[in-house]
Amino acid sequence: MDDEKYFKNLTNRERAIFEGGISMGALYHQFVGTPINLDTCDSLEKAIEESILLQPAIIDVDVKLDKSMIKQACGSAGYTSLEGNMLNIEITTKVEDIAVVTCISYNEELQYPLMYIKE
Image 1 (cartoon, rainbow, N blue to C red):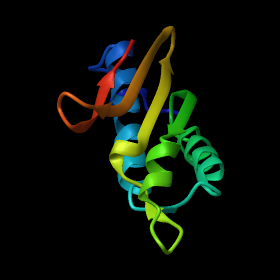
Image 2: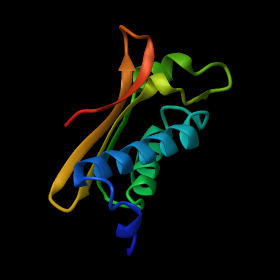
Image 3: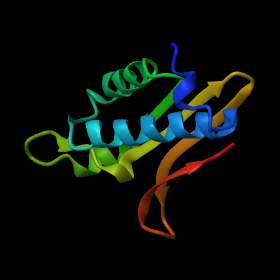
Image 4: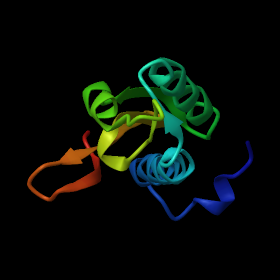
């Protein structure tokens, strides 16, 4: 991809963080609200991983949905909607020799699904 001219003002680390942040925001807003139950957890985890891996600089995605929370939230209809507090995701981006891990997980202290840079 010949996009270097658009990012020449960024270091490799800044670009890796940028790509991770864009991907994390995209997946959050794309998948939160998806109907889910315990039978569909594994396939949704895989779908999220595979779709995010298509984006620039992404070299690894690890998605773990909180199955106990999903089980508890399933009502009489047998499903619930995916919520941000059910997400535990790590995205690894790499730009040249710099790798960065961007995460989202529910932060009890803040009572918020927090996106942050782990490494």
